[in-house]
Image 1 (cartoon, rainbow, N blue to C red):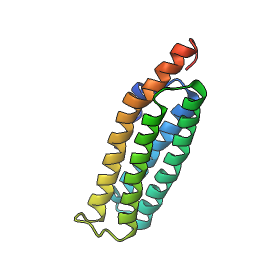
Image 2: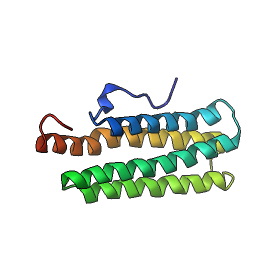
Image 3: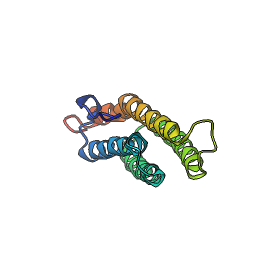
Length: 143
């Protein structure tokens, strides 16, 4: 069973954002599966590298949308994005460094996947839905 499960509660109504969120869910599940299924360490490293790259791309898309609609919480949202990227890059450095942490590789990969899944679900339902609601109020009938 996948760790990060997409459901209607994450739908923003913005096709590009919803598609990107789904890809992030998939990336988290690939990272979780890399060690759960006993695959190579490089698979976890590649999954985390993709998650980091794609997260940046997604954040750029979201922030451009927020600028376009004049979203007043843009700076707060950008800070949340920056904080997550700092955490992902720190985790990636630990993974690339051969698990010089108290957890072994499998536990560390599971920790990273759980952290990302929890963060993404919370961020979509709290922060992202804020700009979606703002966009709907500014342009009724269109998110």
